[in-house]
Image 1 (cartoon, rainbow, N blue to C red):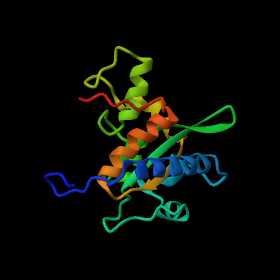
Image 2: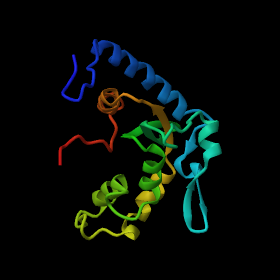
Image 3: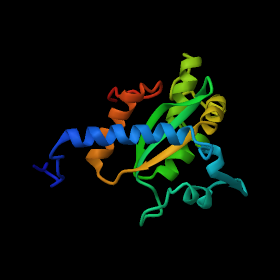
Image 4: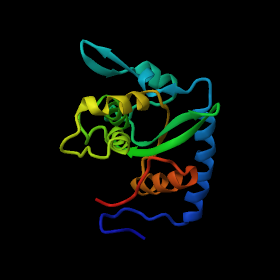
Length: 179
């Protein structure tokens, strides 16, 4: 069965759910690995620009696609009581750029997670009034999150897995309220 764009629906959702279980286990292992990297370790500042450290990404097995990007899931983990637990599951066709935006971006659209974290502490802040400086403490926290990437090329699988994994991990910072 296909939709109007000729995109296939999964034949068996149980297969996709089993895959979610499998990658959830790998995510936990990878977040808690001694090789796990903080987001800030994957980027360098050169002449005032934030540049992806290609070697670091490639050493972790996060190789770019034909567009020099990475399509898939990214999972932020925070250390709590000696363990790293997932706190946010995100998806993007441009994960390398999206991670840079989350951690070094200038406005609320780029740093949506930093905005949410800032808004939680300063209720009076709005998207119109928040500044990059307001979000700096939250961006610093996000820069220090451990991160794991999972390549997913199929759009249906990507969106499905974001929701399933956020539910499995009970991530603090995911919300699926529509705009």
